[in-house]
Image (tube, rainbow, N blue to C red; front, side, top):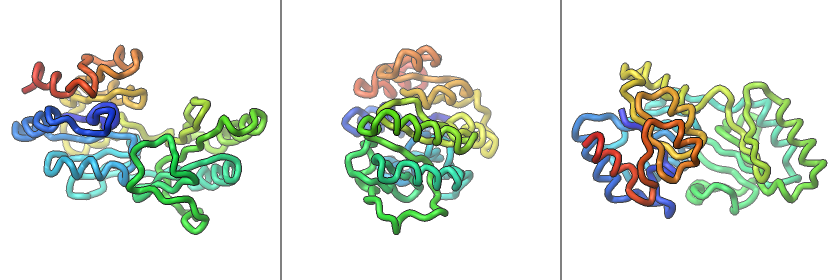
Length: 257
């Protein structure tokens, strides 16, 4: 099993899949190797990438492990942020700063200028009619935090961190990303491994960022991209060239194909 992150790994910095990577994936598939996409993106933001890889991808893991599906659309696992946290988040940040709510189907945001660079095709501007207490959010993001007075944002941050013990809040100061504390890429790969009967030691995973660290800990072979932070590189078994320098192709040519 070969597992690929999307942003900074499968894609170049200009959001393209290199031809060398595409040809490598075709060779992997032809040799009988299953291929999985494992990304922090939600399903709505992942679909355009999957559409560029027709018949090559066997499984898709989205939302940092909160959603797993087959290439035929069968959902193997799906989990969402707790409704009480979504409601509390909305009450705390609405009218104070910009925010977005990412679901499997769309991204609802108060601004089209978000920290996410992959949502143009699935963005909906926030409307109270699009928000309800049963909304199934994969992750939440409050941004432009630096515009909020320090005392007020400290208060909001403290309240968010006490809403639910099973929710994680990113430590970044300029935007706060909210993710499930239950799901991550490692738990998703364990679930997939159990369901399809391929042991994790036979998984090779490619990644470039901190949300790939837990994935690197459970797979048999972890490959960090050359553009990854040093801490991510140190956690991998191999470091290849960057996403802009045919990193996936270079590793596969040397070690697999």
